[in-house]
Amino acid sequence: MSEAPSRLAANVMHFARLLRRAGLPVGPAETIAAQHALTHVDIGSRSQVRTALRSVMTHRHEHQDVFDQAFNLFWRDPSAAEQAAAMALLDAQKKPKPEKPPPAARRVAEAFANKSDKPPQPQDEPPHVDMTMTVSDQERLQQMDFEAMSAEDIAEAKREIRRLVLPLDLRRTRRSRPDRTGPIYDLRRTIRSSLRQGGEILEIARARRTTRPPPLVVLCDISGSMAKYAQILMHFLHAVTNDRARVSVFLFGTRLSNVTRQLKARDPEVAFQMVAHAVPDWSGGTRIGEALAAFNHKWAKRVLGQGAIVLLITDGLDRDGAHGLAENMDRLHKSCRRLIWLNPLLRWSGFEPKSQGIRAMLPHVDEFRPVHNLASLRALIDLLSRPAASPSGRFERMAA
Image (cartoon, rainbow, N blue to C red; front, side, top):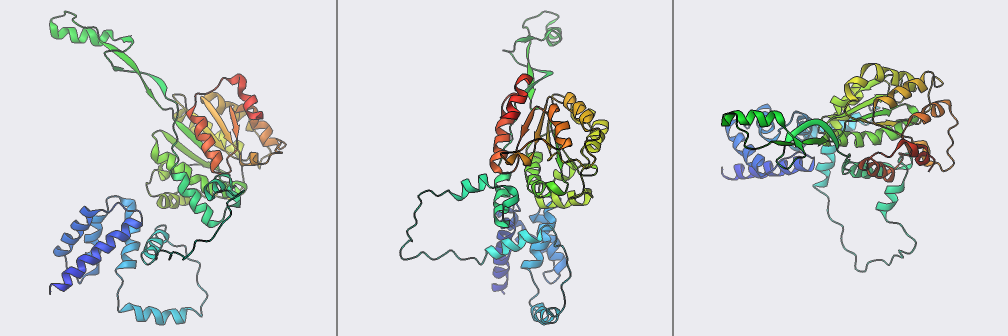
């Protein structure tokens, strides 16, 4: 009888390791709590075991999907294996139905497969490789265009994007905080403190202006010509939204969609699944002027206060022939402190603003930069880390 509990404890430990490889914050405390929870439920009831383990091993609502997939994969019914093998032979003759897996299935499957991976055996003699005139994989990935990446390169690029940090220069606000060495004399607080001493002023209160990063607003094009880049840039937007406060993200194709709340989910796959349900016009046409008009009318006064910085990510190819685009770009430019246009078409050395949309938008931006690889994202972060330059050098930077 003592062998069964020991095997159960070992299985719970291995299950906790599987959850940790899948990205869930499961440590020794959750493992011990799971072993204690199983002593208070009926082990023969699968639903009770699932509920007990999930209640002590998950701490956020978005982690439940990953837990359910891992539980179904790890705690399988041994008697159902033969039935599944027989059904597989029958289903092999049928055409499989295109069913989209849940967002947590791939992560759990990769974590479960890594458990049986073995390290490569060392060779007797390492092969001789001439490293002359070669480039490291890391440097090659930094310069590779998003559109030319393979599935493996895209996965590695997504991991690099999650590690990027986006600092913004601090801006002084109208609020102040108490500071004994501050440059501002706080008369109101001085008089208030003197009342405690019978109206006698013993010390003059000082204050200092508080500083905080400005709001960041992102308008990203998700039309057919931008679909490949938008899919990868969504990981960058998700990381920025969860790393900083006061970030607003809008997607537009034929209409404007606010996806800030969806991207607040910590799990990126859960966030992207929510975005997919909220955005109906992915990989469709482009109406940039109409989308900017909707943003200026409905959202500009809400999110463009206190020196906001706007990132406009689009190739400038407008379906409506730049109808009303110049007027809405001018209004957007006047409503924010910096308007930075990120265009993947700038990856070409011979790029010229020939389309009507690009020519209508170009005079109303402060920065015109490429966004087609990891190096361009790092250059964007360096740009946002520096104070804004004077408007007189705007077109010099765009020409460079």
